[in-house]
Each structure stands twice: as structure tokens, then as C-alpha cells.
Image 1 (cartoon, rainbow, N blue to C red):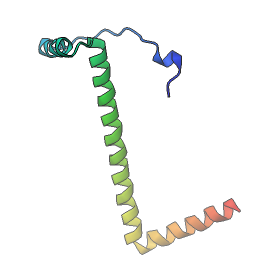
Image 2 (tube, rainbow, N blue to C red; image 1 turned 120 degrees about the vertical axis):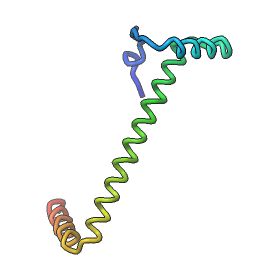
Image 3 (cartoon, helix red, strand yellow; image 1 turned 180 degrees about the vertical axis):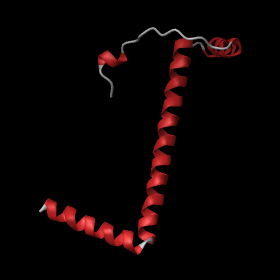
Amino acid sequence: MYNIGQLEKQQVGLRLPKYLVEEIDEFVDKYVVNRTDIITEAIKSYLAKQKEEEFYKNFDTSCKELKEVLDDPKKLEALKSFEDLIDELDD
């Protein structure tokens, strides 16, 4: 959750292609919202999508690395030794 300071709005200047501004204005007229709300929601949606893609990319990489370890007896034995070391440190 965000604190009150993080929710405070800050003015940012940006340049958009005319066609995009026209599309935004059509949306504004049709749904009675303002440009700021549309652009804010678009950015939030974009960032959420990027974070999701990064999560799944990292998850996929982790799964591939785990498969490599499980498929290689030497790597699997090293992992078991590493787990034993961690167990010893936890005691």
C-alpha cells in the first residue's frame, strides 16, 4: 500500500503523438473522465504487465535451471551436499 506522500500528485510534462491525444480525447468525451486518469491507468497497466512478464521469465529460467540440476547426477549430488550444509547451519 502507498502512504499519503506517495499518493500526492506531481506534474509531469510529456509529448504524445497527435493521433494518440485525439484517441484519448475521444475516450474522455465518451466516458467523461480526464486525460490524467486515462494516462495514469495506462501507465499502471503497462508497468503491471512488465512486472508480470519479468516474473514469468524469471520463473521459467528457474525451472530450466532446476531441471538441469535434477537431470545431472553430479549437480544433484552437489545440491544435496549444499542442502546438508544449510541444515547443519540451521541447527
